[in-house]
Length: 296
Image (cartoon, rainbow, N blue to C red; front, side):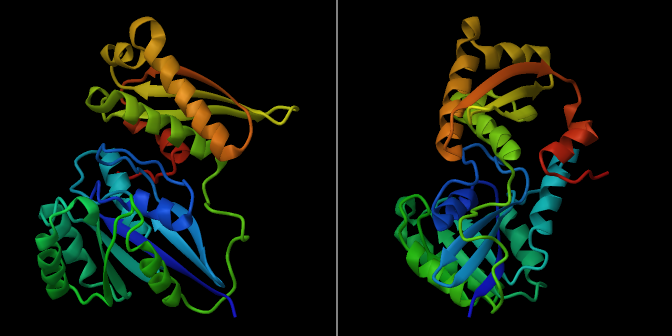
């Protein structure tokens, strides 16, 4: 008898949710970086454990929204918990508990779905604080189980995956055995380029930037041709991304191209250009492109 269910992965920004989903799926389906709010939209990863298919909804970090984009991301996060068979709260064990976590905990109290507590990054956290965090959170919410894991090293993940699988209801699989995500290749291409922007520019990169895939064409030789524009709000930010003589943009493109070729298993021709678009966060069509709902 097959089993299949939906697990909503929620938590504050930088808790390691995307890294955890990638590790449970067994390959990369979500981008990661040290920059807060890297994940902007909900993404579904598909993990297998024997005869069980676990659909993992990777959601944006939940925080106090200030702008339209923020509100859309938080809405996507809570939207990812709809119809969930289980909600998993991921905590950054090193950062610990704070206002952002408290907001999420208060919102989860009224939810009737079974809940798991996952204390992540135990490999870099003070051991004496782990039990303190677990005790406080279990006093606030009735979690069915608590797990101490490191998504980066894999510690504790086999036990967590087994527990997730056992909580899934009986039912047919929703995806073929070889499908690991619901993201289109077009969406994945934009995310991989955005990941390289974060990795290579770090604090220099303005948060208000986006990557839009304008063209995605499969060539007759089996390769794929991708044209993307990097959107920024001010002309002064253009030089940051281009670098001297365009060297930085070339490096961003080179690394994104290599990563996409590895994931897609084919040769990739990637063409990037930078476009200054003041107020791009108010472009309704762009929200559809990156998988977010428009919010007023």
